[in-house]
Length: 275
Image (tube, rainbow, N blue to C red; front, side, top):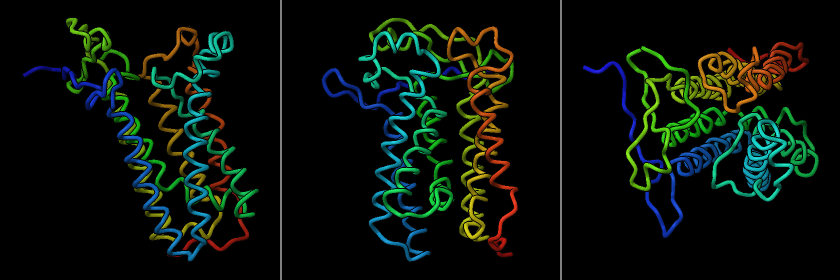
């Protein structure tokens, strides 16, 4: 028996000419499709207006995509992208940041609340975050298929050897494998799935949406709390993080965790959720 896993998955499902259809994109799309169905059930349960549902889907997709891309560009490599702004548009070359995606969603929901529902942002967030854990888990599985965002070397039996020269390997070169490393994509995916299950239970079984902001707060604590601790065994995403006590992912997670604590545990005039 080996004491590690050699990961040789192809990031692409198939190719059309020179363009690849990747598992990452498929995972992203599946997550959003399932998320839409879950939110649809919320709309039916609360007897809400159908146009509101269509609008929140559009605002969320656009906010996530734009925010995640700009977050990567300006959180991790601002000098390069400011000097080469056209490179920001090359999303097919990779580079999305979950913290940027979160900020993009915040802005999108602010616009959605102001222009569409005229209700509070927390009203929308308590619904939107329920399936978001599932979407985040699907994205991390896409990262696994891409051989990216993995962790430090480990001697644990579930360590993965990832292909480091993925582009050259796909052109026919011999693969160059990393040392057996923490599959942090799977660690995060597991935490995000647990968060998804918890939020589903809070919404559909405990009716926690009646306590505005509570589900949103729990979501922030679970998602970004997990992200903060997993970052300790994850490789740095950019060279400038090498000498940092806490890396960029951890620094960006702290405000979200604090915000989650505020929303989850603040006093509310709304009734507590049912038993």
